Every structure is written in structure tokens, then in C-alpha cells.
Image 1 (tube, helix red, strand yellow):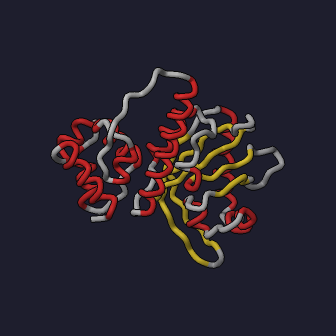
Image 2 (cartoon, rainbow, N blue to C red):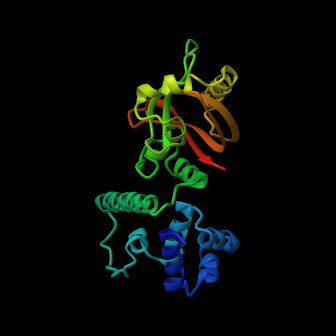
Image 3 (spheres, rainbow, N blue to C red):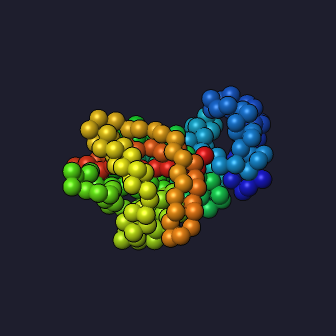
Length: 239
């Protein structure tokens, strides 16, 4: 059992008396979470969020395994709301980093939840920043996707061993022309429709003389920078 699995099991026992009542309270499927815990599989960040919400505790309580002492909040105000949002965002970042350290990962649902919560605007972005790639919108003369940023822990960075932005074109450019054309068509579709796509991809490629094979689920979504500039965001998770 991984550290994350053990912490999740302990949290459920401490706050709910066991895994089954925890799943019932949080609206999670017991068999799925039980399998994730007992087999040391990845536990989505969204599941941890739902367990904390059902228990009525903050994400920090899960991360630290400490009981919380509550205080009565003052009357609502714009300043208070901004401070609360900042504190919650920091808690998200802390828990995400802790989960990654313990072998966890964000999942497709986590990214979709982020997209809906922020309406595609690159706010509260730290929790997923290093697991996604950002691209400029394609122009008619482009022959390859144009990255703005490659996340250090994104699937592309790991699969193609991309350490810097300038590594992208030499690595990805080795793909078969039909694979590149399909990917560019997906980018263009997202740009045109302004709707995200979720697609399962089977990729077999020869990169730097080595045959690489991978099946993954990809989210491609239109997003907007804080300055209003449109980008295309890509997240991929191995199946």
C-alpha cells in the first residue's frame, strides 16, 4: 500500500469509521476507491477533495493528518472572500504537491473540474500547471504544433524526454506525418468550436531510434490567459 493509499484509508477510518461509510458520504464508488487503496493505484485529487468536503474539514487536514480547530468567521466582505480564495488555492497546491510526492497524480476528472470551475481561464492554475502543455493557436502556415509551455511532468515531457521548449520540435517532429496531421486537426477543431475534446489515443512512434508505444486519454481544451490571449491546453494520462 502506498503512502497516499494508507493516508486515505486512515482518513476514512478516522472521520467516517471506515471506507464504506466514507464513500457513501462523499458520493464515491466503494469498489473503485477500495481497489485504488488496496492495489496502490492512483487516487484522483477530486476524490480526496470530496472526502474532505464530506468530512467537513479542509484539505490541509488531510495533508497533515491533524485535527482542526475552527473559528467563527467575521461578517462576509470582499476582502475576506479574496483571502479565503487565496488560502484555498494554497491548500490545493499543497495537497497536490503532497500527492505527487507520495505517488499520486491528477486524473482526467480533475482537469475537467478545473476547466468548469475556472471557465477555461488560467486562474488557480498551479495544481495542474506541471501536468499540462500549453500551445499557441495554430496558423495556416504552421506545420507543427507551437508550444508555449511544456509541463515538467506532462506526458509529452516524459514520453519524449523533453527538458526544454526547444526540444519539442526536434522530438515531436519525428512522428509519422499522419500522426502530426491528426493532432493538428484536433487543435484546429478545438480552436474553431471553442469546446474541449476527450479522446483515447494509441501512439506508436520511432523517436531517436527507439520504438515507443503508449495508449493514453487526452483532453484538449481552449483556455484563456489572464491577459485574454487564447491558447490550447493538452492533458494526457496513460491508460
